[in-house]
Image (cartoon, rainbow, N blue to C red; front, side, top):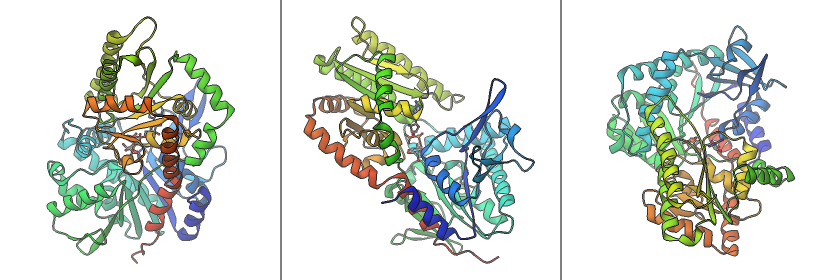
Length: 492
Ligand code: ADQ
């Protein structure tokens, strides 16, 4: 079983005196102003939960975009701040981006081109030469910052996500004595879909400077190999899962990301969580016998309109659930500068209004829509009070909400309705798996979930919990990093 202690031990032993560098767009610690003072927040994403303890025990440098309003005021002359602020253990190096750079690299190329391209959720990607140039420029900027941190030391660099496809190349050109792993948090589409990307050779060449390239599932690895095969001159060894270009090989492997199972379970099994459940029930006016929840970023890949339409159909087909079922949708606005995100926000709002108008009776409304972020303790309480958690992504690399729901259910109750197009569906086979494009099928799945007898619910949830307990976030980081640490350094 992978635990934080085992992960720390592996990293400490294998890393020896080499520098460890993590690179991500989002920072693990963000500074903002609160009245007269500056406060520090730590967004607890899966990545931060897994890698912050490793960094804390082994030291090293985390390089990220300095995006907090007070970030510049707290760094030293080298753009460093030691974190965590209350007991510093490692260095956060902030990279500053102009509005123009952020627009082109983050909103443009990463989120209007690569995100829809990789998800195939029928939102057309937007390809803009100037965004691509900005993406290239920002990748170079990050490479320069990392090279600056490394100097002439040997370093292992762990790169996160689709914002940095060109970074491995720029970095290795500057520092040949680094070994890099790159984890791609979103799906890799099939070769047919990818071939429309106008700068595909350059993007793939950049990625193939990595020693190790990780995706969530084997299917994405296979899609990647097929894409490379169709796009460039290379040698592919499908047995070993390697690509060789110009004598340099990249190992391509699946590492399914997960959640801190024990941490979530322990926190969900407390009187504080029970009190929070009570508070939230009252706050959202949840008075019905059955409660469903959905928790997502407001993103067109998450299938929120499809989910709401399924609830509409469910209430039409199973009128006995009228006034007995409430669905709480927690949706945090995301990437709000992009038009398609404004449109999905509007669509979700309008559909909720329509469905509530159509089915609502007296004080009862079938859907409660909450468009804002909630802290982890509130999400845990919501997961606990749900009879059913509904995850209906049209396509999703993994989907951590599904795993968080399972981790929170120490009572071994509750049913997970899960899209078959999430990476999570490969592991969570005891969920009710659905096709989110098939509204009627989803309506039936909801009915099946709510009518499921208690022994069946418990049996399924126990199996789901075993799965997430074993394949926890520490296993993800442990497997990826142990594979990375096996690579030899090239002597300069
Ligand atoms: P996301 O697309 O963001 O991640 P997901 O994996 O579900 O999707 O993670 C979302 C996280 O945000 C969860 O931890 C969830 O609790 C949190 N969250 C969602 N809505 C929230 C709200 N209203 N308030 C507070 N927190 C909220 C990308 C990929 C995924 C992949 C992850 C990790 O798209 O497929 O699983 O990275 O690799």
